[in-house]
Amino acid sequence: MHPRLFARSAPDRPALVMAADGSATSYGELEAVANRGARLFRALGVAAGETVAVWLKNCLEFYQIYWAAQRAGLYICPISTQLTAEEAAYILNDSSATLLVTHADVAASAALLADRSSLAPRVRHIFDIGAELAGAESWDHALAGHPPVPIADESAGFHMVYSSGTTGRPKGIRLPLTGGPADEPHMLADRISGRYGVGEASILLCPAPLYHTAPLAYGMAAHRLGATLVIMDKFDAEDVLRLIERYRVSFMQMVPTMFIRLLALPVETRGRYDLSSLEKIVHAAAPCPVEVKRRMIEWLGPIVYEYYGGSEGNGSTFITPGEWLAKPGSVGRADWGTLHICGEDGGELPPGSDGLVYFEGGWDFQYLNDPEKTRDARHPAHPGWSTLGDIGHVDEEGYLFLTDRKSFMIISGGVNIYPQETENLLILHPEVADAAVIGVPHPEMGEAVKAVVQPHRWEDAGPELAARLIDHCRAHLSHLKCPRSVDFDPALPRHETGKLYKQLIRKRYWS
Image (cartoon, rainbow, N blue to C red; front, side):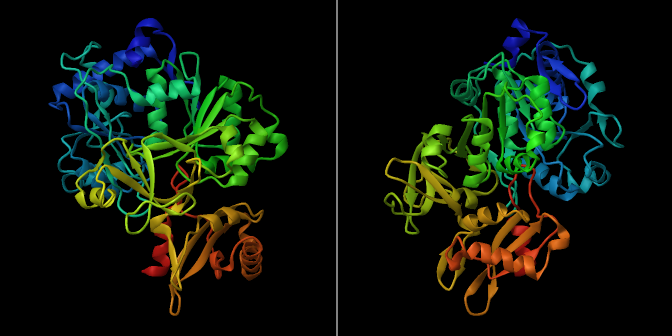
């Protein structure tokens, strides 16, 4: 399936709608502008297999450019709009992007252009969709010179994303292109259609940045299936409810942080909107506290699905609401590839034992320009098994339960401590807005457990709240897992997808 098919059968159906102002692109218009874009790429000498970068906030042009590059056989590299010019330049150079499309509302775009020769010397063309950036070419003007007909050498391109860098430098995840036709079937669209029933009548709401993998991929799948994608500028909890009612949204892809913010709305606010059109929600990207998910199911019904997997595409698990209610906290059984739980020596562990989670049989990904990271992700004795660095165990029925990331493990007095359980407990405390639990240097124990907490009310931050939170943890967890101390922060550093930038917090104590 491909949006081109719906440009023929339903050219006036909206493919894209911006929630903020109602501006839209129909499937017919999407086909025309994508063909113009593909012709522009070829006219500029951008050949199949090369990389074009997109540094944009959520907008109609994001997918217009995506589908132009996809049919030109290119890698599409989205860049976070939260990055500095230097950070964006790292991705541009590492990905060997030859062309960049951006906009003046990306905070660091002007700084990149001002120092283009040193920051991004390999980028031959920089386009601005708003024609406001000094030194950039006008995207609209460049498109206008090309007819809306397909290029002669079409082939299927795909996105090449960079990890959000929560444990270090972002890693480029590059999958081999098939070389097949642009409209060849795609596994992700088939799975989303079969699993969630997404099709031509579906309305999808995207509340997250499109430069992140899951929102981008689900939007891509929506267009392959002929659905309408409604895109928010940014996440706002009550706006989500308003838009579900307004557009009769049937499907959403979300992250647990969004659940927490939705549940924080007053009950009367949540009851103000008609959410009856909503058929399914799927979430991933970060661990979801059990009580948060339980409350979402109590509110919306058994429509909350979950998967575990990464941008690497090395495998995945899946769990339905019914299964989750029977196995609270599980992320499901393997539905792509085979699960293996392995100890420090690489040997497989029995059910119930925590170890590194490996998949066998998924995509054979590579971390671009980083063979060491690629090698570290492979099992030492089974090169076909790969890991995302998560720790977990399976039960006797093959359901996976995640414990934490290996890189977040705290070693205190020779004991391995995984802080996710403690973080989940703190986040549910009524006085806590957000929390991170890390290991900090300790002269005797090596590391000590510390909580860094964002309180709901900053004026409450202090020794009394710290003592209450430590007592709260000790009432529910082994003292080994509980923080010895609590620091406070007005806002913890989180990616828009909900992932916590723990390395930024750790640096305060380990530098």
